[in-house]
Image 1 (cartoon, rainbow, N blue to C red):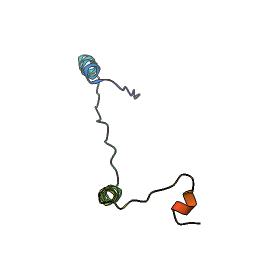
Image 2 (image 1 turned 180 degrees about the horizontal axis):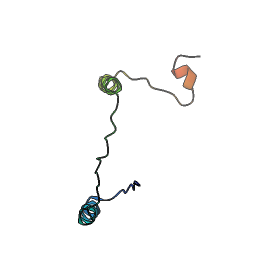
Image 3 (image 1 turned 60 degrees about the vertical axis):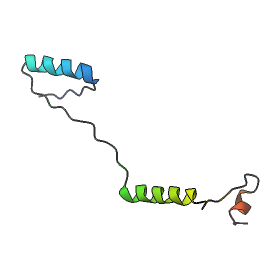
Image 4 (image 1 turned 180 degrees about the vertical axis):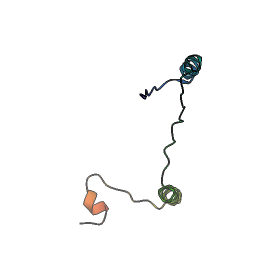
Length: 72
């Protein structure tokens, strides 16, 4: 048996399924898995966002990058 992978829009998917049923062809539909972020990463980003809203930021002078970061 061969495998055919078809990426179809929802309306077209319905029509394809009906065709497969009419020809008595076995098929399976797999939902696309959602990409999720690591919960620790999400927590870190949210904490940094809240920290920035409270004014905890660093201003960087584009004319003196190293100096504005305290690395000179």
